[in-house]
Amino acid sequence: MTATDVLSPAGTAVRPKRVRYAGPWPIPTPRRAPAGTGLRALQDRMPRCGDAGAAAPVLSGDGSERAMLIGQAPGWREIETGLPFAHDAGRRLVGWLGLAAVTVTDFRERWYVTSVGKCYPGRRPGASVDSPPSTADVRRWAPILDEEVRLLGPRLVVLVGGLAQRHAFGTEARLDDLVGRELAWERAPGAITLVLPHPSGASTWLNRPEHVELWRRGIGLLGSHWAALAEQVA
Image (cartoon, rainbow, N blue to C red):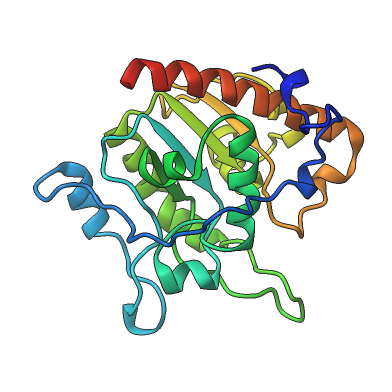
């Protein structure tokens, strides 16, 4: 799959903000690594979320996955279910992944899905959008994420949104320079790393036509690398 393959059935270019998965939307129990493994020990000792630690950190994966997706932080609905990308942004993301032949079943069962922050950071004061994780939250969670990556040893990593991209490539890195390119991330040696913008409707990055073209290239690269990876592990 190439950038030019990211088209609608009618042959016109897909507009990413109009892509949305409309099929059945199961909310499975978040997966965890088998007991006794290093990854399960890491998952079990992660900080709890919410008042008095009532909620588990949001992630899903059992350690068998060769593909990993890293987002920014869960929303409040994700905290309720414990499942990453469980609501609106998830439907848009799964729609994007579908263009790269990653099915919703693939995403829920064959990808390790996590984020920089694993607890809901709350709303921005006076706004209707969620806050990003605070600097303190990022410092708390970053070493845990790096250990997740090390223990999983993925062959394909997709970073979704600016916070995940900055965690990997530094505070000066820009989506414009990363989306649509094959990248190497030192924390995931041997993996192809790709960057996508955040699928939230609040994101404005995809409002510019040149950014849409970068997104198309990124989806094309994802399709190519997922097909190769899926064939290796089939």
